[in-house]
Length: 318
Image 1: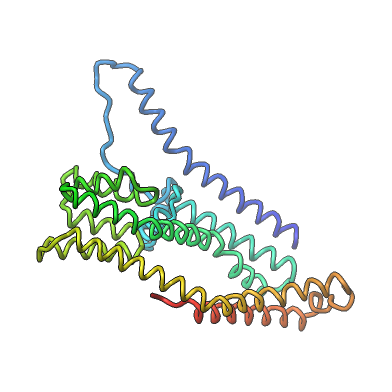
Image 2 (image 1 turned 90 degrees about the vertical axis):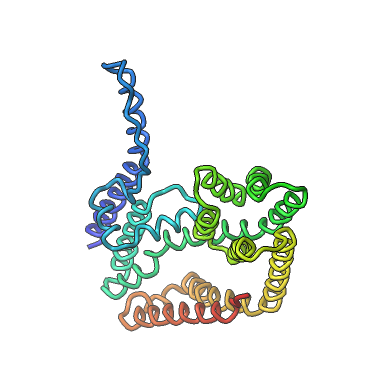
């Protein structure tokens, strides 16, 4: 049984590697083919230029069709963009499938129970998706941290007499990433003829930040009702800084609760490992008997539920 599980895991990993390789190489191969056509026969003919955006979620046709039929491809693409990752949604799906299969067969090989395999799937399968969420959180946090200073730069440009589009260009040139990249896209959309309202709406859709939504709402309201845009944005920057100050106070007040959650989550695992290393014969019934394995699965589930509850308590929204 262990040999069969190892073979299946090897096949799953091989499939993922092949899929990821195809995803990464297809674009470069297509670009190289287009270049070679220019040096082939018919030198007087102009090469065909593809002006449509490649909207495929995967270079594997069946996977692209599956993601479109399930209506999850667009959400995964947006998530990957917000995380600052260049992979396509199909790669993330293949990685998740590999982790799901690997978690199931490893847990089944260790405990010889289907429920243990399912628990292993639930524990290991979400790892690629959770990593993407972590990358998104880091990037959005960096955006929110730099955004008030970018607003100050925008206000200074407006007070100097520049138009709003020119002030946006200055922010796109002088601000650090990821603020610079997002504002550069908005400025480019405006230069291509997209209305300012639509460009700002696209900006708020690309970036998952409540502070940016404050900015977009303030700009759009000023365009409809009038007023001094520089003063409005200055007050918006002050509001964002006050919000960060309150978030800092909340983190200080909830530090004990968060540390309690970490200790309660790590302590049982560390204690079980220490008992196993100190007295393997005494702890081995937990791994070799049916009752012991059930007790470990129940304890692990309760630990996970408790950690989620503590996280919910200390995660205060502002």
